[in-house]
Length: 312
Image 1 (cartoon, rainbow, N blue to C red):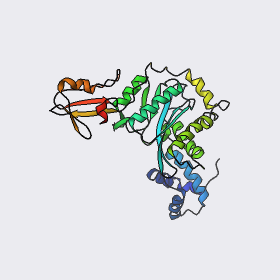
Image 2 (cartoon, rainbow, N blue to C red):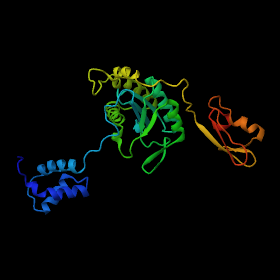
Image 3 (cartoon, helix red, strand yellow):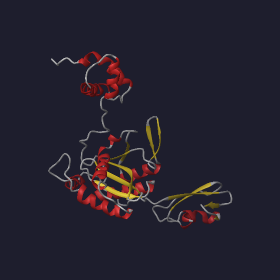
């Protein structure tokens, strides 16, 4: 039989406190116990509080088990950093969950086109497409939440359909849903940034490429310790879906309003386009990425960055 403890008589109030205050510390709990007449030490309060916390607030499961099948899931995310003399960089990280194979890239922004361009590069680097791709509530990919469900951006849905993967969204406030990406960021902070002064963005990009090749891919897999992550990637490639024949067009899309006088409103001036030439002017991107336009009153014209007047 377990040995009796001075805290046995205070088990009920401690449970009640944890239900009301989930983040109750051992120090504060000891203070409250003292008010009830407890005269024991801090150590046994700390141990009992840990036991009760696990019982009252059991750990929530991750989005899927860690033992995902090869080729089943990838995950990606952004993380901002400040290097050198206040230089701001954004690190994009995509990873295959089974092999832990990374794709790393740095940028000065986290725009939608940048995300899709880096994600396309990650799939090409892996040589195939996993069945699912998981991310969080990322700007440009998730428009909003309704009834606790993520409403995905139309262009991201189109991107996912082009590469034939299921777009998944992690629960809000649950970073452990994508553990590989989160742990890689911690390793990046401790191993790449730790003890280094990186003066410029270009230097960081070069260092990141070296670090991925020499440190990340050469690292032992956390579960298959006899193989490196690079070797695990070679095994997983056979289970990835093939890439489409043509890559997704990730160029910027510019939207322009056409008023009642058939004038296209640019950022700095108004350009007049006759009705006959309007369609030709607004579909100047090369096939198959020709953009669409609607003529007539209060129409909306959209074009890719290949159109000369889109850059005006």
